[in-house]
Picture 1 (cartoon, rainbow, N blue to C red):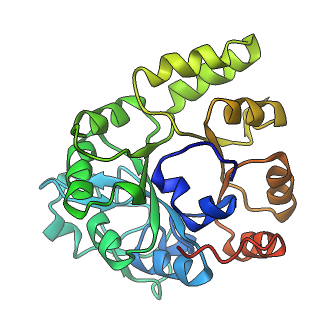
Picture 2 (cartoon, rainbow, N blue to C red; picture 1 turned 90 degrees about the horizontal axis):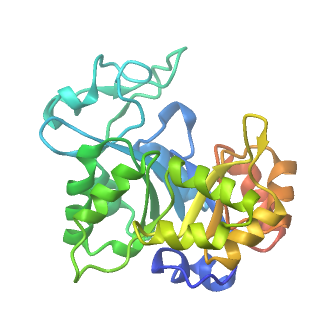
Length: 281
């Protein structure tokens, strides 16, 4: 990772100190058990120090590690997760996407349990709903885990709600831009107004990273010029979801600061060849 004067989530980590790019396990290390304790444990065992997860909030205010609005795609349950209490959700089982795999059979998990179970792991947390903002801030405060989380969200309004619950005495929390901010920055880069736009966006919300795909439709998002512009502005660039070795190597040569992947074996091989694996913290 380039020295960008970033928060402790980046700078105090082993990869940060060593100048390493981050390898990030997408929802853990098993697509059949995405966002479960088992998937995160497997990622940690493979050598990951950073895990990308999604969170939603139950009817009784518990922060649950889960991607979809509906339970149906990967669990034994049906309907909206937010309509159920944690006691009800804890009886459901993750079986993976169709075709179902009965041998998977992983329970849903609370974010707080992941934080406690893996004290040396850092989490890239995608806030999937507005309701998660306040309880997430409280969990981080209770565990003094400010340096272990990067807050991300598709909607910048979700991030804004989270930071509204951050108090003056709390430590800096890392955060990446939402889709609206990313779109503004891409346009600003083309128009030669990148630095001014970064400054304006930072007046509204913290901005430490951009987490972007290689392409968005026909538009190539990640270019060497764009990565360099981000670095000059003190912004790390993480690219998702990268599963091919050749693409990993191309992006790392370009200078990106992190790769989000479903392919733990290949990213381990690529980074090990650079002397940058494992990344356990």
